[in-house]
Length: 391
Image (cartoon, rainbow, N blue to C red):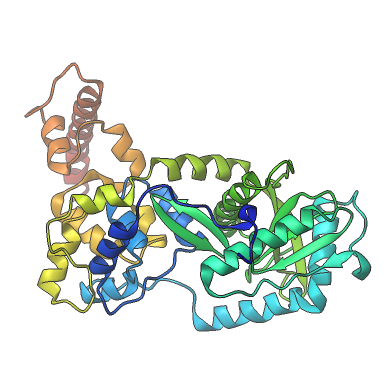
């Protein structure tokens, strides 16, 4: 008999995946274990849903850092070992004593009306199990048991959640999930950047909110599989950071409704992995141990959509930037400019339209480019006499 009830199991897939998994394993290389997707990678993937290259590489579990090195375009990406060690120490301090301090922060910032998380009202179930599938099932079971025990707090330390991404399962591990006495669920993100005078760096808070939104989406899928419970996954997450320049924790509630909406929409738009893999040339292998020329051809066979924002989110950004510049793609100058230029996708096409060599004069984009070119020429002509006089 199964250890877990049906409602606690990871979602069953209704499409055959054996062939796809075999193909992805061949793409990755037989000697390489797949790298798991995390929430940070999913947030970056959702921010650029048109990039088939990243979707396939992440879906196949390819080590993009090693791939970038093999292509000759290494990227300094990720946290330093010092930052990771400092973050681990801070997280352990916040979660000490069965998460009592963390629960008090959650109670103070998002649920002050509930009973205080005194030890007799706190549960911290063991979530250990074999493999990500087992841990996912154990987490779902613990969440269901917490909902069935109202009036108590439940602290889940590093639960495991599953989320379907472009036809490939992703296993996610939030720092913590708290079940409130009313049965609702809150995601807790613990970060090592400081919160000075009650406020943290806006860019870092935004990145944490996008990451937390992925966890909330995964929790919503778990809640949807629990029968007749009406569980609410809160759209305000708790961000815990060091206070000022100390190692003491401070917290704030972050509204992630906007990030939830954007991430949900972008993940739905992602091309399914099997559709991308089906268009690859036979024998394509993305193994970083392959010769550089062969590997470059394999990577270039997968379409990419580069934008400057990729530099902060993808290990292959420098490689894709070089290719984008070689092709003269306007996306290398930013998504906002690309959106303004409509059907003009290359720098050469933009310059030709601006100089009157190509393009329909009735096209608003072409007309604006020609007007800008005329103003530039006029400004340069006016500047020439003053330049000569100055000399």
